[in-house]
Image: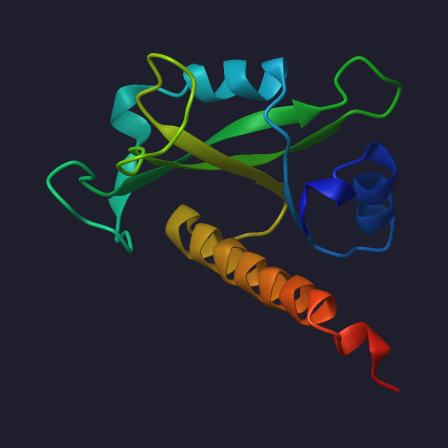
Length: 140
C-alpha cells in the first residue's frame, strides 16, 4: 500500500484480521532517524535498473521499528529501506548521499524478496493512476 494508508487504524485493523501488510511510510523525522541508525554493514546490494559510473546501484536493509510508539497501541514492525544514489539531474537536499524509500511490514521473508515485491506493487499502483487520468474512470 502507498503512504496514504500508513495509519495506526490501518495497521491495527490488518493485525486484528490477521492480514499481512506492506505499507510505504512517509519520511518523517522518526523514520529518518531510524534509517540513519542502520549500520553500514547491514546494507546489502541489490540489482538496480540504472547503473552508470555516477549511480553504482542500490542497497537494502532492515531494522525493527515501532510505529505510533507514544500511543496506547504501538505497532512493532520491520522497517525495510532501499537506498540508491541520486540519478544525474536529481534534485535532492543538499549533501544528500542517498535517496531512501522505506516501508513497514509484518510479512515473513527475506529483505530482498520483500523489497522487490513491495516495489512491484508500486508499479501496479502507478499504472492504475495513469489509466485513471487517461479516461479509465469514465468507462462503464
